[in-house]
Image (tube, rainbow, N blue to C red):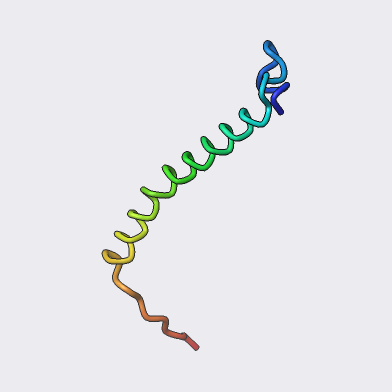
Length: 57
């Protein structure tokens, strides 16, 4: 993967550190992406009236 993303520089000098940084950044991105979504879902739950399901026969 490093070779694909870094074709000009090749494999990093410290691959384990590079992988750790990539994993950390991916986790931070995930948290940043989910935080607004969680808030929006909470708003939808409070603002949307519940509908009762009726069966039509």
